[in-house]
Length: 195
Image (cartoon, rainbow, N blue to C red; front, side):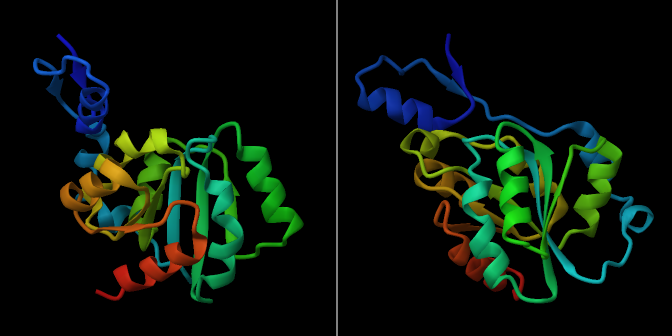
């Protein structure tokens, strides 16, 4: 028995003549801690001077956050900031890009505890999910999407293929932009937050 966390994998292997008739699909879920704290909005929420676009997660080649920095910083309105929380192979590169280009509206932070992360979730105005523009990533479903979907806030997603369709159709308040296109990301963000 083979179980996959994305139907995109079934489609991919079917195209490549694998016998997938008996494969099952069960996606990832979310950590119960995040659901249990959904009613603690007043406890966690502190008024921020600026609206926050939050990315919290792995900072690897697969996420490609480094490709968004310059354009997101350039086109993000003055009343917004882009907060990145995480670690991974691209952390140092992201930090270097921010520092060299003096991106004053982009902030990089190391990983935080679940309690601190929940506070960031409540304080943020919108969430970012992003996958690099690799063909192999158009079949995956980022597990973070289920967690963020609990918070009833706009989510902008840089993805393509099955990934983009699944998230747009299955995760509430999700809008899709072209992977690695920071200008398009801000355009989609502005549209999503004006609803």
